[in-house]
Image (cartoon, rainbow over all chains, first blue to last red; front, side, top):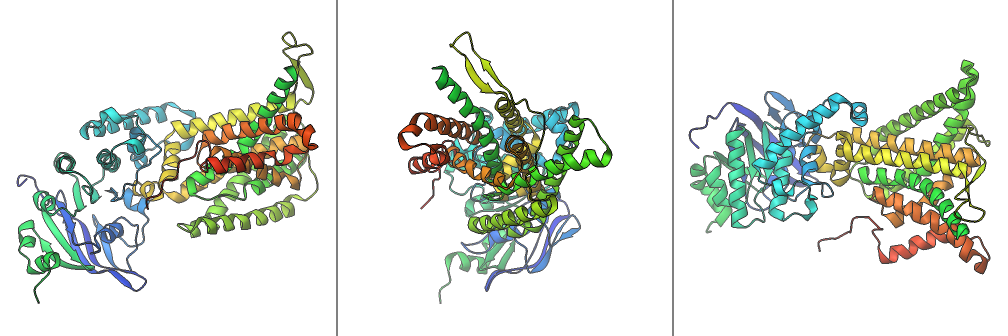
Amino acid sequence: MSSKKIGDVILDVRNISLKFGGVNALTDISFNVREHEIRAIIGPNGAGKSSMLNCINGVYRPQMGSITMRGQTFSHMDSHQVASMGIGRTFQNLALFKGMSVLDNIMSGRNLKIRSNILLQALRLGPAEREEIMHREAVERIIDFLEIQAFRKTPVGQLAYGLQKRVDLGRALAMEPQVLLLDEPMAGMNVEEKQDMCRFVLDVNDEFGTTVVLIEHDMGVVMDISDRVVVLDYGKKIGDGTPEEVRNNPDVISAYLGTSH
Amino acid sequence: MAFFLETLLGGLMAGMLYALVALGFVLIFKASGVFNFAQGAMVLFAALAMARFSEWIPAGLGIMDPLLGNVLAFVGAGLVMFAVAWTIERLVLRHLVNQEGATLLMATIGITYFMEGLGQTLFGSSIYKIDIDMPKDPVMILERVFEGGILINKEDFYAALIAGVLVALLSLFFQKTATGRALRAVADDHQAAQSIGIPLNRIWVIVWCVAGVVALVAGMIWGSKLGVQFSLTTVALRALPVVILGGITSVPGAIVGGLIIGVGEKLSEVYLGPFVGGGIEIWFAYVLALGFLLVRPQGLFGEKIIDRV
C-alpha cells in the first residue's frame, strides 16, 4: 500500500455546518481528501457521517461552508450535477433499480457518458448503436471485475444482499468517477462478504486510481484499508490523521469507549 | 359462436384504447410517483388543439390536401403538449419534489381544472370534429368459417391498430434505448438515479411529453369517433379501473388490464346485461377493479408492496 503515490488535494471540505430545524447535524467540519487515497469517515451512530457524505453528494445543502472539487467550489448543486463533476457514490440502504437487471443497473451508470441524442437512440441509428456497444464493453469489464458474470440478466431485487452491494458499487464504477463515496459498503455483511468487498475497494483504488471516501462502522476494516481517517462525534470533528494517530487520540477513545468521570 | 367472437373482438379493440389512456397514467406514476389526475384533461386539451389546428392551419396557409393539413395539425398539437409538459414541470412539479403523494395528487387535480378551462378558452367550447379519414364502414371476416361471418367495425380496427403500434413503440423505447433505461432508473429510485447523473427535471419533462403524445393519440382517435367535446375528459376516468387491474407500476399491466376491461365490458353487457336490465357497461369495469383490489391490491403485474416493520 505504501507504494502507491498519493497526490494533491482533490476534494476540500471547509467549515461545513448543516442544521435540520434546531438540530445541528454538522458543526464546522473541515477536512480534505488527496488524490488516490482511501479516506475514511468514522464515528459512533448519529455522529453525522452520512450527513457529511450527503453534503458532498449534493443531497443536502449545508447552511455554511464550501466544498471544492479540483478547484471548483460548489454550494448549490443537485446530485446529478455533482455526479457530472466526477463524484460517484453507493448507498447505505441499497438504492438499486430493483426491477432492472444487473446489466441494466450498471449500464445506467454510464448515463453521463452517453452522447447520442434521444432521436438517434429511438431510431437505433448507427452512432447510437456503436456507442451502446462501447458502453456495454466497459460495463462487461466491471462485471468481470466484480465477479458477478453469472447474474448479468437477473433482476437485482432477487439477488443476495452481498451481491446487491456489489452491483451498487458496479453502478457507481460505471461512471468512471474520480472520487467514489462509499456509504457503509460493508454494513450487514458476513466476514467473507466483507473480505470480498475490502478487496474490491482496494483494487478499485489501486487499479483505476480512484480516490475513495468511505464511511464504515467496522473499525478493523477502516484501520486496515484507509490511508487517513476523519472522526466525527455529535456532528463535530474530533480527530483526523493516519489510522495510528487516530487510534491513540484520547478524544476518539473516549467517544468510542466513554470516559471515567 | 360467431356472435361471441364478434363481441370479444369488439371488446379487445375497445380495450386497446383503454390501454393507451392507462399507459399515460402508468408512465407518469412510474417516473415521478405522481398519480396524474390531469390525464383526462390532457386528452381533451390535446384533442381540442388538434381539432382547431386542423381548421386553422389549412385555412391560414391555404393547404388543400387534407392529409397534409392533419399531419401539420398533429405536429402542432404535439408541440402544444410539449409546452404543457415543460410548463407543468417548471411551475408545479419542480417545487413539489419529495412531497407526499396526496399533495401531488391535489396538485394534478388543480392542473386538471386549469387545463380544462384554459383549453376551452384558447380553443373554444363547442363540439369540434377531427376528420382523419378513418373508414367507417363495417366489414365481414371469416365468412367461410361461420355462417354470416363476423362483423367488425373498420374504424375500431384501425384505432386499435394505431394504439397497438404506439404501445409497442413505447415499450421498445423504454426497454432498448439509453434514455428509456434512464427513465426506468428514475422510476425505481430518484435518489440513486440522480447520484449517477440523471437529471430528474429533464426526465420529468420527457415523461410528461410522452404522456402528452399518448393523450394526443387517444384524443385524436376518440375525437374522430365521438367528436371533440368536454366529455372526452371522462374517457380517462374509464381507464382508472384498467390501472387498478393492471397495476399502476406496470406497462404490460396497462395493456393486459385494458384488454380485460374492454372485453369484460362488452361480454358483460351482452351476456349479463339482459338479466339486470342493461347498462352494465358503465359500471362493470369499476366493480371488476374493486373485486380485484380486494384480492390483489397491487394489481395483476404491480410490484408487491412489502414493508419492513
